[in-house]
Length: 360
Image (tube, rainbow, N blue to C red; front, side, top):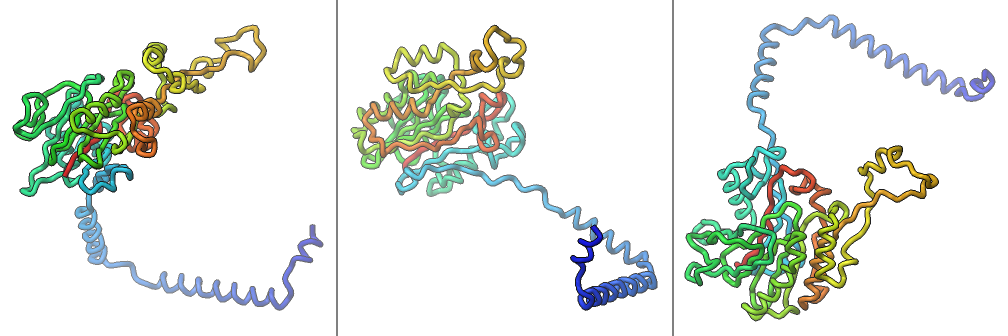
C-alpha cells in the first residue's frame, strides 16, 4: 500500500505548485474572516428596513395560479374550419371538490349549480363558441340514461321535441344528439364512458354519442350513423368519426352478465374481451388461502375479464359503412390518467367532463 501511494504522488514541482495555491486560498479565507470580524454589526434601523421589505414581499405574494383550462382536440376534426369540437379535462375550473380547481361540468351532489355554470362558460369561451353579440352558444345536453335514444336538435322554431327554447334544450332523455343547425353546441357528459363525435364534411352535419357498455351493446353509434343518413342524407364515406377518451381495456373489468349481453348481439364478441392478470385478487395477495394438490405454479392464474369498448365502437362504425381511414381514437384511458380526467370507476365520487361538437 505504501509503495502504491508513492508511485501515484505528483512530482516535486507539481506538489510545490499545488501547495502554493492552497496557501493563497487559505490566506485569502483568513483575511476575509478578519475583515468580517472587524466589521460592525448591522444597525437596528437596517434590520427594521430589511424586515419591512420582507413583510411587504410576503404580503403581496401572488396566490398559486389556477391550472390552465385544458381541452383536447382530435386532429381528424381540427382540419374542418366550420367545426367546433373538444374533449374537456378536469383541469382549470372553479370547483373546490375532487381535489380543487376542477372543471366539473355536470350537477353533482358535491358541487354547486353556480360552479358548474361558471365552468361551462369557461369551456365555451375556450372553444370560442360565442355569438357576434358576445353571448355564448346554447349548450344542448341530455338526461343520459345509458340508452340508444337519439334526438335531433332543431332551431328555436323547429318541431316540438328536442328543439331549442331560450338557448337551451328542452329536457329530454337519451344518449345521442345530431344536428345540422349552426350556432349550437351538442354535448354528452362522461367520466369513463366513451364519447363518439361524428362530422359529415359534405353536408355539414354533426353528432355526438354517449357510449357506455349499455349504449354500446344497444348499438347507439351504429344507430346514430343511420339517423344522420336518414335525416341529413349523410353518406358514410363522407363521415369522420373520433372515439374520445374513456376507460381502456387495461382497467375495465366486467362481470359475466356484460359478456353475455354482448354475445347475444355481436358475432365478433369474442374479440372484445380478454383475460388480464389481477394483481389485487385474493389469490395473488394471499396464496396460502388457496392451497391445493397441484404443484406450485400449476394452479389457476388470477385472471379477470376485461372489455374493450374502443374496439366495440370501432366495429360498429365499420358496420355502419364508415371507412376505416375515417375513424380515429384519442387512445387515452380515464382510469389510468386521473390527473387529467375524471374516472367514476377509479374514484367513485368524482365530477363529469363534456365532449362537445357544433357548427359555426
